[in-house]
Image 1 (cartoon, rainbow, N blue to C red):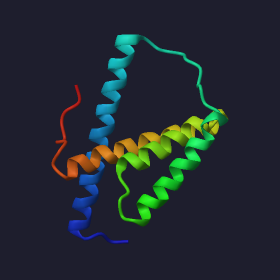
Image 2: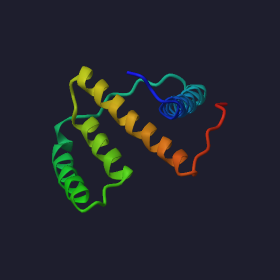
Image 3: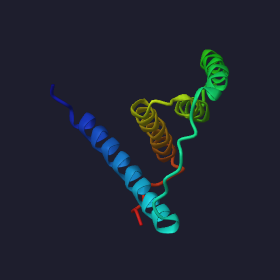
Image 4: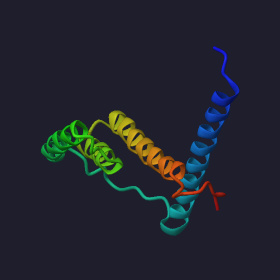
Length: 121
């Protein structure tokens, strides 16, 4: 597959933006550990959140149907998926998906000019 110059520039910008956002997240994690130390809390997840996930998914489907889906809607759905999961391996996968949506939302803020690419602290 041969990329045009414009396609290559777009891909490079996307990688740069993702790397910048992940660098900011890494900086935040360093700050959290410096402030609070390494924390070991219980997961607090389980089936108690299943009804909320079901209701939220119905809301998200309706919002999508009417062209009103927002980043908030997607992030909250991912959060409810995290909250429902008890299996540690699947919980880890869901947490990565939640983080991925948060990063995508941050990148979108940049693309619309609301969150400039900045150097990590």
